[in-house]
Length: 239
Image 1 (spheres, rainbow, N blue to C red):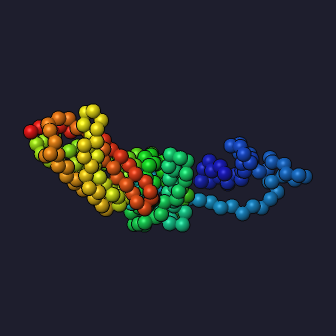
Image 2 (cartoon, helix red, strand yellow; image 1 turned 60 degrees about the vertical axis):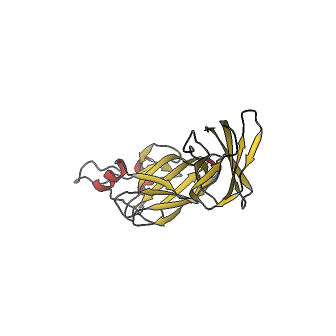
Image 3 (cartoon, rainbow, N blue to C red; image 1 turned 180 degrees about the vertical axis):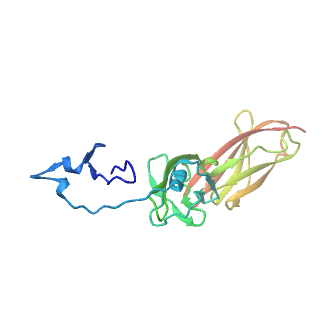
């Protein structure tokens, strides 16, 4: 539809299927007639300058996680249409999952975390109740806790008798440490500790061993999913 000036009449046009070519209806032949003889019903969407501002400006997008779910929040500056706005995410294996709209006032979507998949791609489509798509974009996010288990640097290091490892879990897990010397011999295995999702401290006592460099394998075992993750770290004992 062309609108060259407010005083001129609208010129009806249509677009050929599968193309970007627009033609005047009175020039398009359909069977024995032309579309110019039709009396079509016309739907007009009025696009305001506010719409264009929403479509072109940078809309803040925030992604974060707790220990079971990830969250994506946008701040579009308008009330979204909850029936048509959506967020779709793709994990590295190619699986697509629809996120759940958790909060409407500041659009916040919730999605499950897939342990073992580190990279997510989001397809975000927002609409208001009065206009067409206002935001249609993609975003890539890397899971900051790979495989759901992070082992921090122990402190102190070097240490005298005992040292502490900070750990972070995205799932309930049984955690234990295996200690190896430089010859690859396992010299100690700690007792198994049960931890809930969150940040924790794991103390390691090597007071019965000689000074030297040791290697620790930290194992987190998710008993529900029959899934285990291992992290390794070196440490120095000085007496």
